[in-house]
Image 1 (cartoon, rainbow, N blue to C red):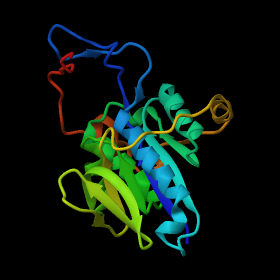
Image 2 (cartoon, rainbow, N blue to C red):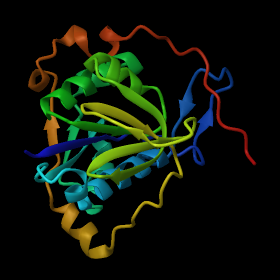
Image 3 (tube, rainbow, N blue to C red):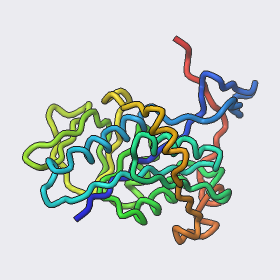
Image 4 (cartoon, rainbow, N blue to C red):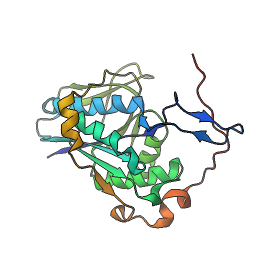
Length: 232
């Protein structure tokens, strides 16, 4: 049987170029969005699992890594980057109906996409969306993951707040800490090949979601103020 790993990718503003309005209600972004650093660590773990799939379970068969992101179409380059890092495929939820939703609305759409991809293991970076996806899917989740290893053919997870490795069963969502590994870097040849590869694009209809189940209509949180991280 094949093992499906889905890595949730979160496009974030480049805070080094962003600024706030005087009321702190609006964040002004400059330049393209970038991949959350902890997502790179999550993707690296997924690629390592694929490379060591035989150690995981002799009967597991092929391990497939899919990257998944909800974002405007101008963020597609982030998913192209994941393809350059040798993800097997990339899926973008970019329909305008998805945009403007809060974490709850985003999690609903991502959970439906993860289910459609038949994920056995879902990895996310730091943040709350991954946990909300797990709640939507009614699957277990593990937070603060700092390591993923193999022992006697079983997948084991190390977390920041546990004294030893945790043997896990699938399906599972694991939220990975930033800096938990050293992400690989794509070379120029892989970047050029990835530029020619297709990113799958799904709409709410592809996920059997109605208009009122996505975007602002499905949101329950209003943002009143924003804060940039303190320098230094």
